[in-house]
Length: 193
Image (cartoon, rainbow, N blue to C red; front, side, top):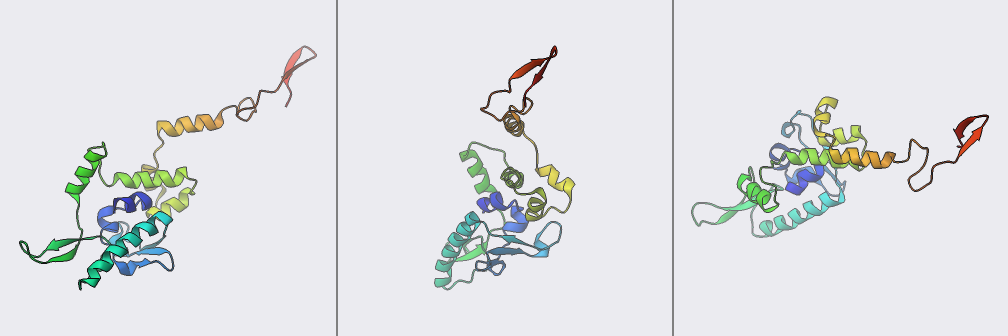
């Protein structure tokens, strides 16, 4: 589920947790978000990435064992919960995972993070991998540029990467090449291009 948010940039509580299998189309390779589950109340279709397909196939395999046991399970993200104390377990939709999230963050060495941080990570990953910003906006469900810009934050690392990419540009060289030789003509010095 966390990996899902990391890949898509979707809001976990409202867009990922309520997903049902009727919204997953492996053949078409897409996921359909219902309008009532998105913040801007606009439904959208998200094409599956390879990582997302792998994650969903794993969830589907887990679901098949529950179906074989005779339980209905329309949700993509669920857990087995006992009905009453020590009663028989049945699948139930996951609606929150606060405790598990805190334990995972501490284990990863980054306490205090919130699931919504993955929204920013997903946007940054898309942009840094060359996905056009307009496309990243649509995949994440951002309707306005101002909302998108809140998530697409420039870091110090981005600035250092840009500086490396621009290295040698002022001298007209590509990194690894030497600068052009200077020639003196008529008392002035000029560069040979």
